[in-house]
Length: 321
Image (cartoon, rainbow, N blue to C red; front, side, top):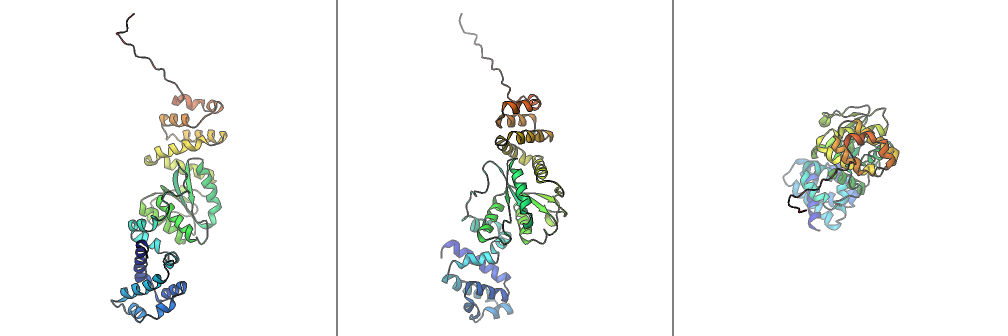
């Protein structure tokens, strides 16, 4: 058993000692196929029920015996009882080192040069969130759509954890039933713990609890395209995101079809958030065709985009005739 696995066994032991009931022990025995080890221990249940001092030792003894026979059961138990999420809330820094270091530090679901945004939502909204994701992509925002599965696989849960650990912004679709979802509430809790910006989308329900302070965006009855625009506008109003997001928008606009590019440039200009200098830089970097320049001539003229400044050569006084 390597060092990392031993540390994970220690985390499991702490969780079991503080949270397990007798029924949980039986479940663990059935999952691992080691029920005889649990029921055959002379002190385990007695020390648990009577709060004896040796319960900690009994827990460690039983778990070590189970895991020494099969190390692969360590990850299975962590997954089944959601122990990694429990440990993240209890010891976030230690959790990061223990559970995330073994996962890719450069997850391939984030597009390079885009703002990383996590979409938290109920499973039945996957289709709408996929549309929202595609429209956010037009604005240089890469959205991670959570809850691809009703009961996420072990691999999917790890990807969700990595996305939560590396996201820069979280958008939450708050609607009836959201509060009853353990997954959604844990995702919001993760963002709050990391002090990540949260933008609630109000869809028949207001934000609650610790993220109730965020007013959010009224999304009910609006198309994904309009909601995407409001998310972008909200982020651009925040100075800490403005420069980065404008760079991301510039990269995204360069790859869009002409009509969409023109529409988005005009929308961006109508918000009156970016300065003329920022718009000038953006216009000069999005590969405008002559047709597109003609359509945007008013904005180009106002910002002095594409204007070539004349360079006056220095004249030296000591040049002879």
